Image (cartoon, rainbow, N blue to C red; front, side, top):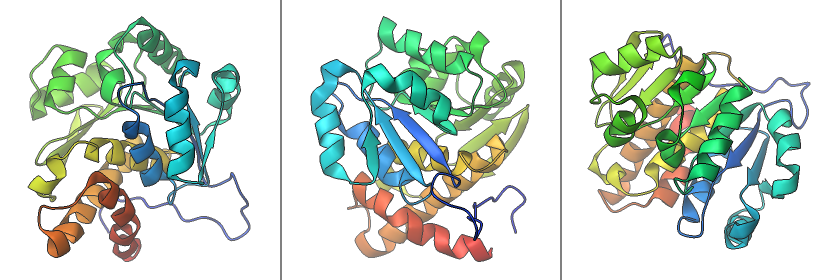
Length: 260
């Protein structure tokens, strides 16, 4: 078994809500699909998925409700209640980069709970608020925006140690950096460059992390499953698969790893 591989197994005596509750905060008038992809990825790997957007984004809420019955949409007025209730918070998918986003990202980080910081939230963080339970999922440009450094293995290690966080640096070969230590995740293919695949990865990560106390294990496992899903699709469709299909393939990709 790989040292960092961690796939949560629900206990036989457990009931709804004891095997992972996540809250997705995201979406905007322009980008309605990003939080939906995160939700589609998460729904098979945790018990409950909540979703929150702003009241101005009613179209996003409607789109989420149509996309899957497995997500509970909550009004902005009740967000604080579900921030407390969630085992893990994922924020940034499809959000605009503005003062409201910066304020909300800061509020999430100040809670010092398990959280996944993705997409627009990476460009709206105050690195000084990062903490050991935070996982960041940047690609190269987002990493530079967040930390002011070129994205590479050395700088990922430096940033993870300086800010006491875990970084899943997305690339052809993903890098998981935690407390200055590095782990590489191989696999995947060029079909995974399509828009939305990062949202899929973030949603999966939040679901796994909601049931796992090790951020580095959650990041490694999510990256591995995501890449395996892309490889499975490549065998059937070559490069012609979508981010939605990637989300649907995650469970099949994870199945063999339970026995790894």
